[in-house]
Length: 119
Image (cartoon, rainbow, N blue to C red; front, side, top):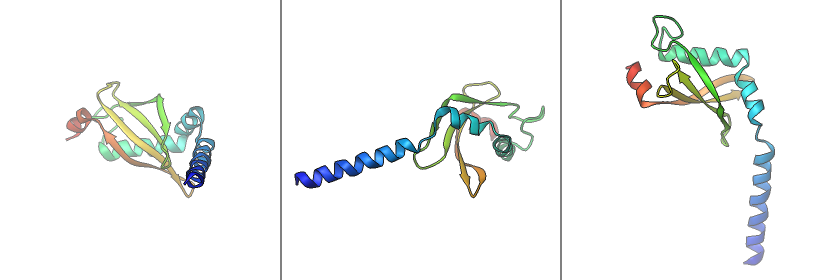
């Protein structure tokens, strides 16, 4: 039984080290979020929520990314917070993914206030 537990401990340790070594730094993740092709994907996602997004006629007039809250999702991708119209109650929390050298946004969570505003 002790051998079995020792083997399990080694496996967990190696897996943890692998995850740690492959986790990008916050700085690298934030640089990724600033790439023009990523900005384009983000802005298109906003326009999918609000056809007039980022214009005077839109509900979503502006957005900013809270770079302090960026983190790596162990299932893959970069999770981040977008603050809409400068209001901390209007938040979207999407996951940026990259597959076959193309960026995409995974299902994002909208704050209750933003969800109500977009109805």
